[in-house]
Image (tube, rainbow, N blue to C red):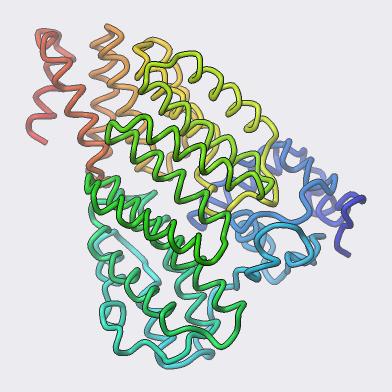
Length: 438
């Protein structure tokens, strides 16, 4: 029986059995890794679920729990229907289970095959580029639930592949499903709920493709995609999508050296997110704002924003957290603070935060491991620890065989330039030789 807002989730507690909350949280993280998800589950989260504070898990946790307990539904795990819980689902409807091939039109089957990726980044990029995704002539006259689900699946697959391999191999192919998603949106849907899902899915896909452009150094393309996502959010009145678009726009503005714009975009995102009830989202937006203030050399405003970020983060995860935020755990928090410290010239403090980020990151997500190690190498080099910087840089080089990210390569090149005066050190010299060869 599903737990009420006032009652503990005794069903979920029974499923834990004799394991401690910490032991069960470790099982959740292991199960997430098995299906390519990332969740920062800990004993506190398990306690909140069992106490009934988390009435319905976010979509990342939902997939993990259903993987752990095959054949069961959320109701079987003690959760109420998603539509009964506040948040996005009441407006858009739940994200469906993987689509069985017996449903949907011929066009839906082609879309599904085109959007579903597997294997290496090369295979995934080819799969994403199947014919229908670049051929809007084959889009159905009216989109249905299957088409909406295919767009949502495309978003998840692109995010997963980016986590594992980086953006460079994916960007050009990922633009094709984005065009198909907006063609479906233009075709319209017979039901308003499907129309809402298409708006949300197309907007999130625009953000995802924008991120691939962003991370691969195509800043003008990224700006265009983020603006497209923001326009979609405004048209459909989707506060969650609006906050997501502004978050990424703030990140992009920081990378382009437009610090004032980064602050304003983060603040606009915070205004949109204020209606959603997600402390984790507010934490991320506060970190985006802090990075903007750091770029403006306003130490006091940066510290205030960082304090807000930590306060909101400490409130934990909740059922109102957007699905796309599954990446935002303690490792990312540490990484974003390290960027603030580095921008302010506090390289020793930046290195401490970057080291914690690298240590905390799940090794399953090679792209972030490489990013955090690259940030650490740069901070150590500027903090006057060249041998340690060379060691961290060597770790990044080891990962570049499977990660293709212009951001990571750019950070590593900056570190190499900083280390040139120390090239007589055997460790630094070996790193510079490897980097030049790579």
